[in-house]
Length: 400
Image (cartoon, rainbow, N blue to C red; front, side):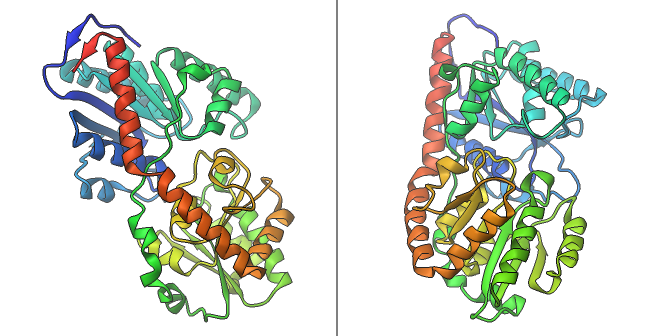
């Protein structure tokens, strides 16, 4: 965090936005929507990104389709380790900042927050902001590594003018771990264009036809990276219990990742292989949600899960683990159902509640659809971020 004498912006407000990688997921959609939306206002936004890890899927086409052309940095790698290439990433970003002179550097995701904020400090960028879409401060790594990460984030927090949380739960965790004080951590929810999901009824029946699933079967899905934090094992364990309790239910795993083969082996081990379809990455998610009777979010940790928001907008009921921002997203019993993390019996019971009470599930889905349609709009994301940027610049004596 640096200071600057009073000045008047002679042109558009320059914002350098940095994300570790544009892999399939909420943070990638979030940064693209921000750059696209702010670009229509008095902002010149440039997006810097590293490359995706194998099996994660890329949203580069999504960015380009919305007029956002990221500058890809091979030195920027989304790993929770420090390597010599991180120094190269810092130096390259700092060099660009000194030349372009952004008024604001805004980082997203952990590694981008590390290299981007240090580069901004070295380059004396006036305003530095970081968004926490979630965090890895507890429960991901060994106790000693978690403590190292917490200490690092506390230091980086002192280099930041603001730390944005996407949910109250994320903010509370940041305060609890000493990363920042509550007054320094505004909450700005995610923002999406949910139109395609709200109009997905036109696709009803297409996924079932593709998979050969007849209408008398219930279809239960999980969507996202097949990655440890998403805990697909819990989903499959619950699926086994559900399958033993009722006939005519099929499970769909949409996505890919480093644990896919292991999860396919688990499905065989649990005698579920004929009852589970692994689809890989899909670009037609409205078509997926249109036919699901239920979406399950079985994660160990979450910020605010985008797949749950999409499903809710599509009118698909949701059962999720009570982690991170799930509690503020889902009002348990009104807009969906929640269960304690890692509780396979509880998750199976909640799935069965939804499947065996379709009228109740439909009522929850309707309430959820109404709520997310107003809470998670691109308009509110852009307007709240614009106000924050202008307030921070004004506090530094920089006026538009």
